[in-house]
Amino acid sequence: MEAVTFQLNWEPNGFQAPYFLAREAGLYEDEGLDVRFVEGHGSPYAVERAATGESTFGLAGASAVLGVQSEGHDPVAVAAVTQKTPAAIYTLRDVFGEPLDHPEQLAGRTVAPSATKTRALASQLLSDLGIRDEVDLRSVDPHTHHRVEHQLLDGSVDAAVGVVTNGREVAEEHDRIADELPIGDYLQVYGMTLVTSRDVTDERPEVVRAFLRATARGWAEATRDPEAAIDALIARNATLENHLWIETVKFETAASGLQFTEYVREHGWGAHDPARWEKLGETISETDLLSGGIDPDAAWTNEFRDTEAPEIGAYAEAIDR
Image (tube, rainbow, N blue to C red; front, side, top):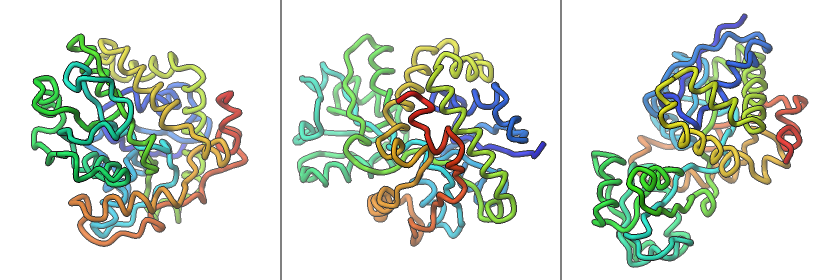
């Protein structure tokens, strides 16, 4: 068996369920891989660990790939897992005063972001709509999303920027009605990617292909059987059973709203779209996410996607879509 370390972007959660199912179901073993999962400390950390060879693979947001690239490292994203960013603008109905159905309603409103990345994406969306100057998009609060939620709950801001499902979590906890606008429905940039180093792609190309085949199978099986995916996740972290409903929502939202798109239907699982990388580079080019220059075209490759594998080349059929 080939030993592989997989650096997660964060602690186990519903968005990661397919990877745990792939391991639980022996899909990595089927490919001759002994995969050890490592809990994460954010996407930038996962990219850096992968780019420097501390981990074989990392799970990380595409913006973090470019951010670490701007620091002088050379990470390479070998699969675009979620074709859409998980960033979302959310609010509470009693705070906003009406259902939030489209982003143009944010004109004249105050919006608080949870992180620099989500703020940049929200700013780009508002700019694309021509209403950026009409929205008070606050600076990022150092206390992150918890403080943002408090501001929304007490009505000191009209909406917040976080990730999909944040609104539903707040609504459930406080018995209020929430609305969410997924930024990925409007702004064509990437979400999560699988990333590694040039040394791995050069010296262990078959390991990369094997890891992607097994992971794609994990996504396909999880999409067909979400309950099994969540069971595999809870087997890793039993405390999540107390929040079973939201972990299930996270996975199902990722599978249906972020991961599978018409581009995936045409090009298969994990396929990179150059235009999305270029758009992401433009969006974050003037933020403090970058330390130097970036080359979005050099940050990804489709070379290691085995399109002969049904779960990659014919992913839509594999999940009955």
